[in-house]
Amino acid sequence: VHTYDAAQVEKDAADRPGDPQAQIKQADVELISGRVDEAFDRLVHAVRRLAGDDKDAVRVHLLSLFDVLPADDPQVVKARRALSAALF
Image (cartoon, rainbow, N blue to C red; front, side, top):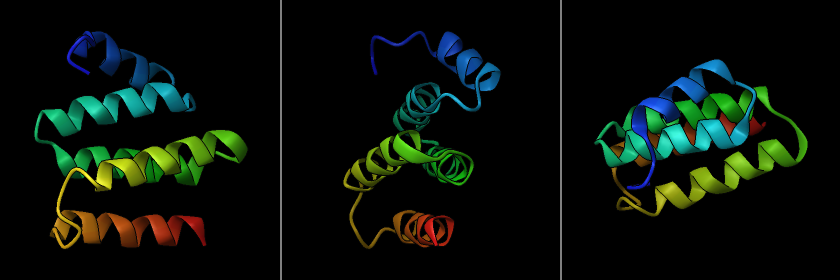
């Protein structure tokens, strides 16, 4: 993440909303920047939009981001609920 060009990553995510890797990279930048809700929301929305392997890649990455914060953190709890709703 530290090697990412944040401006380019943001542009790529905006230009390619259906690209799971672009969304994952942008979420990583957001998380590192302290914009946790934005990162989680971005990936939950990507899970809703995508299908198949792309959807699964985003879901797995989002689950890994949940591990960055304590399991009982309100942001994680909220995002877990949103992910569950997006999947079912």
